[in-house]
Image 1 (tube, rainbow, N blue to C red):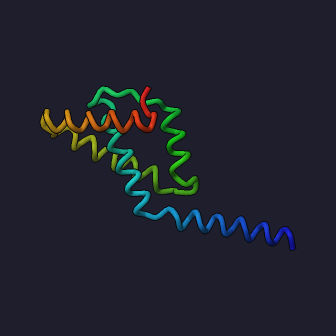
Image 2: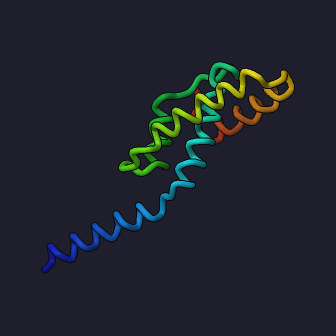
Image 3: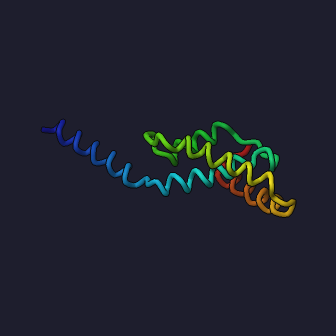
Length: 108
């Protein structure tokens, strides 16, 4: 009986985690992180790879099989957008991107 209760509690925790992470949550995080990562070369940033891994570990459920593909797609889309930005747009974008990356300790 005790084993059954522990299993039920574990299943409930997994179900709660799955419900708490929606497709919209995934899309928003993939878009935001992809935008930051895409700016690496354009904005002269150097990212701390261990910090990126820790950020993913803390913010993306381990069982989300779609996050990596969505991050790749949105990062590449952001790179294409950066290519056509005016100098002023790029200045503004890089300014905020540096601030966000520093806030989350993603840069070296």
